[in-house]
Length: 442
Image 1: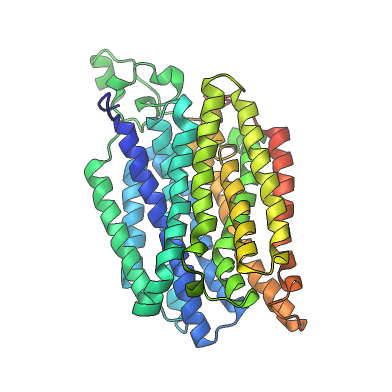
Image 2: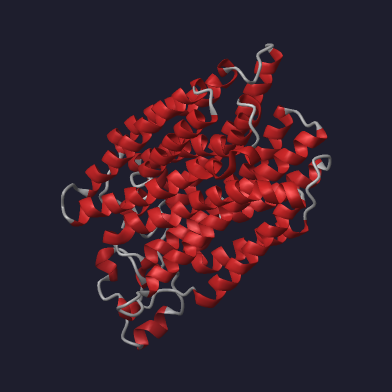
């Protein structure tokens, strides 16, 4: 795939790394910009939670359709269309906390558009990346999320301070437009001629949407291929798929709660502004970037050197990641300094990212042809976690205020961080019992 010096698949993976970075700059950017504007307008915590969670309703609705569209017309095309839609929405929507309906519609549109992205990414990766490179390719691609979040936390508060909240939307739209141009110019489908063992290995053109008639293929001496029917019943009833779904839910519950409410925790819980924290506020997401790639390298090393089977490798990294993260999450509200809170959140998010070398790569282990579909199903669960977690956190904090608890006290935040901590323990057990690294879907 490409030249021997720089295979084309590396360029595809790098472009998708930039893709996930830009997506998470947008998500963190909205949280920062909206929180600033909403606080200035006197919006309460519960109402903020509703607006912040609206994105995830649209995101949940498009996960499975995104996997289906990528399967039918190709992940490369779906990615481009999705990016253009959310970029245009950011460019033209005003950020006014008092115009609730406009904000709700805009966040739903952005959610729907971005919901197509990750199923498409997994479809493209399944087409381009051979099995022995999948862990580090998926880890590197998805680590862009965390680098994007770190960059957003570092740069966007200053942009809001000097240019206003609306400037964040314009900057995000510009980034989306630039990535779309790069993807349109350089992305391509993998050519069959460079994949002589694609069918046996489970990647390559054999996983692309089929084009042309069977008659034409027969005339050219190629055996006609029947378009495979998506085995929905087997997918929905598969225990290994449910292991992925449960862990995706937990991962995103913890991630979205921290991504959307960590700025509020620092501002109200610890009484320190994001501007005062300087570059240290990016550490939790930078840690995710580092640990995600470390997990991918370790997993591929274990598999290629035959140190552990694929199944044991996935279970080991998933368990270590989620158990350590659970301990850090439950300790977080008892660290009453910015440094302590940054340490706990960095450990929690870093080891959650390490765990992605377990459950998040498992789609392509068990079903390379339907990786986008299963990613869509599991990411729907992850998105529901965002809806539940972000909204529930706002309600928990509002309830704490009604109970005359000060938001600077640990008691106001204990349930916020204990819930994802306990979910991590439960999910790691589910993955240990139900998951497999073997291919179970042809």
